Image (cartoon, rainbow, N blue to C red):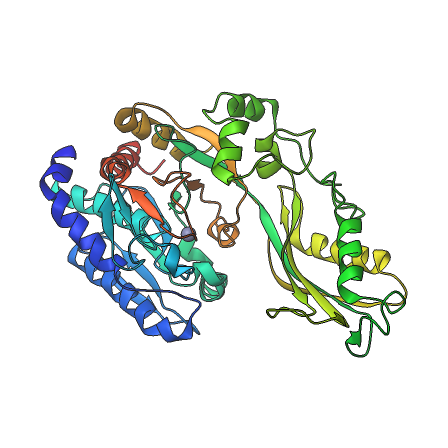
Length: 452
Ligand SMILES: [Zn+2]
C-alpha cells in the first residue's frame, strides 16, 4: 500500500486541493451551489472507483450514498463523513486564503482539510489503493452528508426513514482526531448537547440610567445573577437533578488516560489560557471528557455600538449550551434547565428558555471485534495500538448510526492542533500519507476475519 502512496502522492494531493477549493459552507445560503458541487466532486470520484452512487436530496444539501462492488460473504463496512465546512471567518487571520489550499511546513492549510474533507479523502484513497491492488475485500459503503456543521437535519430524517442503511459489521466515523502525534486513539464516548437561549425581560422599554438607575431592574444584571446561580465559580452546576445519572469513568479508563502523552500544562498552552477554570477536584481530562458542563456563548442586550449610551436594558439574552455525559438524557437536561431558570429568576423578571437543538451523549465501548481489527491495523502501520479516549464534543448523528447495533469506530488521522472551525485549519500531510495504508489495511483485515 505504501507503494501506491509513493507513486500517487502528488496527484492525490492535487485532487484533494481541487475538492478543498470548493467553498462548501453549509450554513450560508449563497454557498448552496458550492455544497452541491462538493457533493458532485465526491460522487464522480466514487463512481470512478466502481461505486454505485445515489444522490439523496434533502431540504438543503444532498447526501451521498455509495455502494462498492458486492463481495459475497465478506463483512460490510460503512464509512461516514461530511463534505460541508464551517464559515472561514475571521478572514484576516488566515495566512493564506481558506479556499486556496497551500502547503507549509509539511501541512496543508485550507478550510475542510481536517474537518472533514481531508479525512473522507483519506478513506476514499484507501479504497483506491485496494482497487489498484486487486480489489476491495469488504462490502464497502459511503454515507457522506453536507449538513454536519448545521445539525444533520436531512440525514437524521433519512436514517429515521431508512434505518437499515446503517446495517453493517462496522461503521467508521473519521470525523475526530488522534489524542497526540504518534498516538492513535478511538473515542469511547462523546458528550451530548442542549443548545438554549435564556431570555430575561425586566422593563417595558430601555430607560435612562441617570433618571432610573439604582432603582429600575436591569435585564443584563438580572441575567448575570441568574447565570451565576446556575453555575457558580466552583464550576459545579446548581441545576436540581442534573448530576443524578452522571457516571464515573471506569478505573480502567482513568488508568489509560493517565498513560496518555497529554499534560495539564500542555492543555493550558494549547488553549492559550493562563490557568484552568471549572471543577478543581477533577483532572482536566475528566473535566472535558467525563463531566457535564454549561457554557455561555454570547450575551445579547443593551447597547453594543461604539461610544457611550447610558441606558438600562429592558431585555437580555444568553446563548448557551449544556454538554452532557453518558447516561444523561438531553430531553431530561433541557427540562431541568428550564425548571432551574424558573426557580432562580427574581419575581420582577420575565424569563424564558428556548431549546434550539439537542443531542444525546454517546457510548461506543471497545468490546466489539472490529475494534481489535482496527487496533491490529494501527499496530502494523502506525507501530502503536489504539488508546481509548473520549471526546468532549458532540456528533449528533452517531446515535442513529448505532441504531442497528453496528459498532461505531470513532477514529481519525487529524491532530489536536488542526484548528477546526478556526483560522488556518490544517491537515498534517504525513498523517494523510500514513492514513491511506492504515485504512486500506483495516479493510483488508476486516475482509480476512470474514462475516463473523
Ligand atoms: Zn466535522
